[in-house]
Length: 445
Image (cartoon, rainbow, N blue to C red; front, side, top):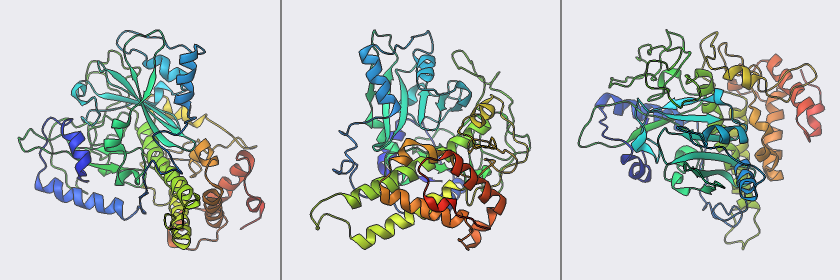
């Protein structure tokens, strides 16, 4: 946890009514921030509008831009409903399941003035699209992974229209472009503590992913389905002292019923399993975008004085590939409790997603018994953005991935990946991942 960067504070201070950080929480902020920083590599340092990227004026082809074109041509229509507006229709059009709903009551959205513990923001997602809904707010918030442009942010006006228009919304970058997103427009799971009012308020937060201890996660999030003995920061709407390693078990809820008025919310859940998958997905997305952008800049034909040094670029790509693969394979995943259950049906929906190999196994299958995935390799390897990576980046990833899966990586951190897991992942990829390099067909012990 840490004090947010200046540009983030400018955006978020308006969102937080008044927050006060006691000395103990400030110490915790430094500790958690340092732990995560030690696990991160460098950030993308070029402009997002570098000619190799053209984030602001490039031609996107992500699911949301395609849907927008279909809306404007009349191929697709959205249905407007009382209370929820276009939410249900948009989720259906983008193949985003309502079972993925998670809810957060920190005022960290640009629509923060509507967000309270009694009116939390609801997020819905699949592998590459996320939708945010705040009851009574002006717009639906959308983030979508484009094959080459990275994560694009959009909004959809919550007013009935003959042809609703989905528009780019770069004000989201005030928070979604930072060190925490690796210097690219990206995604993050932000935690805050519910603290008392104070006139000298400033916004404080920290990000988590699948490497974070559960006791450091979910501050200002509702969590349903967690075991009663589980220590985490969720489900607490009143101030409390936070000391790392000394977090008491959180209030346990099977559903959100009775916590606030659920009118309009598609489900009465903020599923713990959906939260776990979302945290993994968010940082995995940032790693994917960063290595693609770094390689495109390195490969872009430009005067020598403007090109990155070839050796430095090669080293940066190799290092990014190692970090990418480590995260892809859940190296350093924080242990989970045994026998986690999904209250909303999200786990069943997610595990049913393919593709499956000839034994019926899929990288989408969840484990939920001390670890998140049954076969610890991120299903984001199937994303169009992965296939659209420059050859040099994709080849570096595949080489490092094979190096680890074939048993060639001798570092101690890889010992958590059993030979049975490594073999299963290779066999699944052989059957389900088109254009896998030939060396994945080789035998190994």
